[in-house]
Image 1 (cartoon, rainbow, N blue to C red):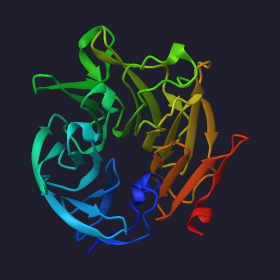
Image 2 (image 1 turned 60 degrees about the vertical axis):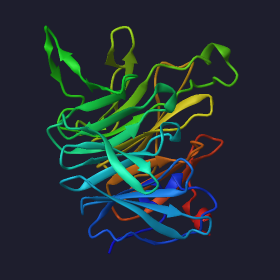
Image 3 (image 1 turned 90 degrees about the vertical axis):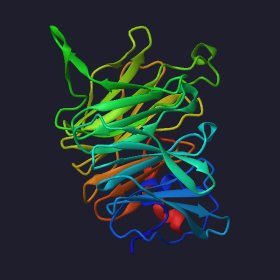
Length: 333
């Protein structure tokens, strides 16, 4: 049976205070994702065995299986918890082209709340927006498109695709990423420097970052007037192979926005921009031995977890001089 250590794909987000541990999940095949909920008391895992499992984690690190969710017809690639203001909700995406939002109807009893089936290929990534924007979910698919699904006040769902219309033909659209979209991540709902600059205190429009098989990192903003998603500037180009993962760092109103991207080219790139700059500053971590599959930020946005193809996980932190240091050994000791 598959075991999961301290949430490999989400190492930097593991709640503090929990001891190192191994969890026998009971999955019968490879585990692709493991995510803690908002309070760090529940762990959701998903696997190629087509199931999702939810565990209760206590203060001593002991775990108990609470629920097993069965609804996908293929490997389940990713799970994501919604903010608890919306109840106990969990989104999942899989090889079967589907996105499912699960809701806990009563203790340990979960049901499908919503199912999104528009995509024509594997859905590789799901991410809930900051709760200030409502119950909004983005998903990235191998068909090249990124979709955004929003719960309306009447209980119905608004479903939009992020794309660029072909010049001269508003009824035809180009994919979000040529060849496939691999990852999506939301920007924080607070502007850089908002803590001390009142001019930036107004929440920004909905913004997200995507990465794909065209080797590009793209930023998109929602135009409320036009009612559609639009590209914000030119795509960010540094990777020489597929971009496997993107993660926008959480913000406490600090001076800059930071995006991490990881690729098949064994590189992790940090993109940083403050409120006075029109361009993104680029910093690269030392090249890894194998392709990098996932990047994940700590809750405070100052530690980056990196999972690579050699089954290793490293933690990185920015130093005062702007360089990034591997602090894994310090934490493990």
